[in-house]
Length: 236
Image (cartoon, rainbow, N blue to C red; front, side):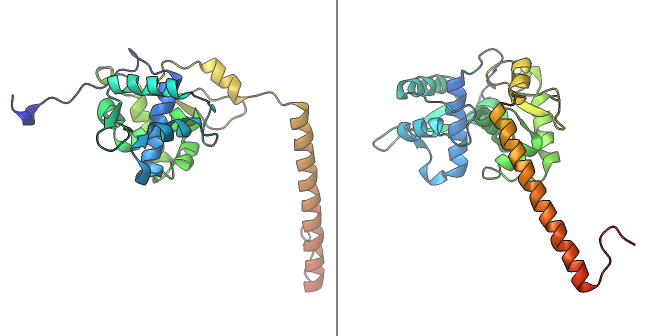
């Protein structure tokens, strides 16, 4: 076999070896920073830890110690999902998910966002990934997600799952399967948290404020109609 005929590496099977929560956070962070801060990428260990533990655009928010991130990086390197770059005074790390898993960049963007922010609708994913990749429309997001869900078993099987519609919601959310099967019941409960007394008070105040604003606008509109000699709204 000539060098040009070297077979492509087999896709990683997440059903056989799912990622831990820490490994998913490390991988997702590397995928995010490759898109959002390319001048600082690949990342040093310190930058990677800061990215993993940032409080914005993370669900859940984690506080990972350096040692745990180092362990996760080493595990991901063994799985060929992360590469260490040579040169320079400090080690730097970059993700290798598109080659290791065999997915296009658009699909990788969606997987990365799901790893960082948990289950989301196609519309939420399109909005949240704007700094990573600008999808044409929600339909294109759905198409890539469905492709990931229908992935053939010989390629490692499905990488995402479309969750059942939660009560009181219009759109279904998607979840990644890189950490193994999802607990649909737990995700449904998390999506429908019980309202506390403070929540009710806050909502009541907001409704009252909006009602006052609407009443003021109605008065201003009536005065304007009078000044212009027009009939009042709702009158023939």
